[in-house]
Image (cartoon, rainbow, N blue to C red; front, side, top):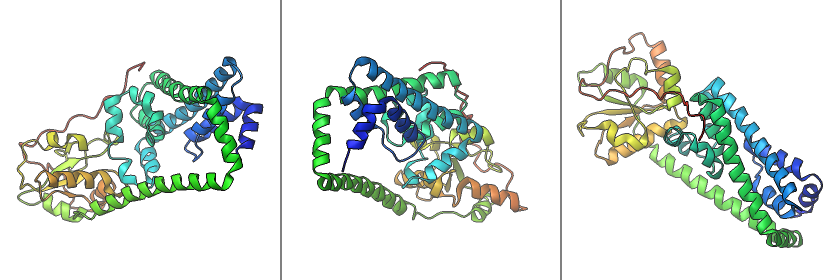
Length: 338
């Protein structure tokens, strides 16, 4: 593994190499930027040069985040869903991302760069939820400065070790390649194991839209948990034909079901790839004693298609009168600073 070209490029055009690498990573390309920042920091000849590298990294990161913010503002939940469909395990991507973003607010953008997988989805969520642009840019810039600054500083403080490591890698290319491939293999194996675990959970019995509609028309209609993300709820409003569905997220399941009887039929519904959020919620409810909880097969999109095409689709309430009311969708962000 020859890192000589990278070192030579950094010595010659350090600021532009850092800018291009960070921009590519933050746009979603599989090109890690931290190794480049570490090497760049170790090669910095002065504080001024390191400052220009930091400025280039922050500018590139904010530009990429701004592009994702604009995509989220223009296309909403479709951007989030598309990003998560590209992940190895979509079940771990959608289910809690928006809930955590709402809980942390602007601070989520400050820490996003340090959380694998969250860095790319946080900006489009901010756009979809109509976070104010000034506050977004301040938070994104602060997070980028902390992230890139930490890597550059570590490279400078450990410049001797970094240069020795580069020399070892250059002199032992085969061994270095094996080590790198081993690390990648462990990471890929872990992700595939998570995917396998989710697929096992997804074997839980589902309910089809037509069966769900028939149950709604029965004397004892099921209780419904709406696990769509806040961005989609804000954009599309209540579920068609299900005005009494209770809005919830997985962290708040216990509060959402409240005093619902353990024997009540419960249907969970989300807008996630592979019905991930609804599956995880139904599994958790079964663990809590709600043995008949089932996810709706196909989720929100399947229910929309069914209600659009079925002449006898339900239009009335589905939950008992004593079921808790759904909370309103989240208000747009108005915080100007983190």
